[in-house]
Length: 392
Image 1 (cartoon, rainbow, N blue to C red):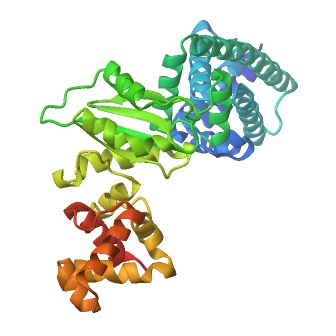
Image 2 (cartoon, rainbow, N blue to C red):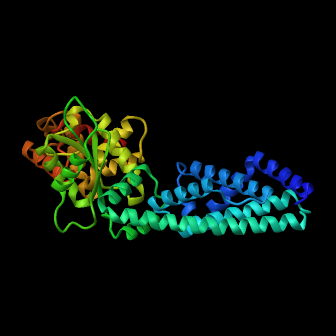
């Protein structure tokens, strides 16, 4: 190679590496053309940009020097592949993303060097084909190895899957289904995400054995979907069938634990469910916890609303708390609830509504049965009061 084409390529390389719009164009193209990447949330895009910037610099360097991918490059590619295999992104989608990036790279070079010499164009083509072939082989091999490792330890694989769900590392329900299929498991859907901790002042980091013990206590033969457990600091985090929420209070109460069970989020929003539950345990007053009862979606959303960072609209929070009471046919129960909260006692509320006190108490029992919230309990009365206040 003569020094003139080397200088021309180096000029293009320096210009492209210095221009942040090139990486932005690569990320945008991948985001638009590869469905799995289109579903990535904002927390995952910085990683995509970092890989795009590294790939751009390395490929341009190989073009300038007529070089080949080095062992350090191959190790990094294998590491990227292993991470994508673990978070459930299909290898076909990942490889397509690299092909899309290579196309953008070619277009950007062509835009900066419209009269590119034939030798430079041939060198670019040869470099890209060789690099894509090498990375395809390395990444496919790393994917297979990671899959084998995950399948070899099913409990660990399920724990890693739950860790990734909590961290929001899954791009879509499709990617999650693909990963579950490779593990040979079916996640519970609908599910219950239970975040629980022992009651007490000291909160040391929880041992995994304690979380798995809680999982075993809550498991019931015949439940649909595979349950799993992990830990976050001093708390156990369990992914369970939705029906497990009904027995969680009794199990936790027998162990002197408290918890929050979220059942209303989809599988691709486990991270949202975890944040709701964890924040609820952080902020709930002591009287919100009662033996035999766990906090629910409704409690968590009310607490988020009180904290000034609601995860749902006020009308949705009201529906979560009030449930069937929002139906027009239950208007008499809403009137009883309003009168009871405003008057402060069943006798006073009965007088306001011109009812016998026993009739008012019967309506309060119906409210409890329909909403699982006892208006006589201070915390539950507060949630009912907030819900009826913000209800449209």
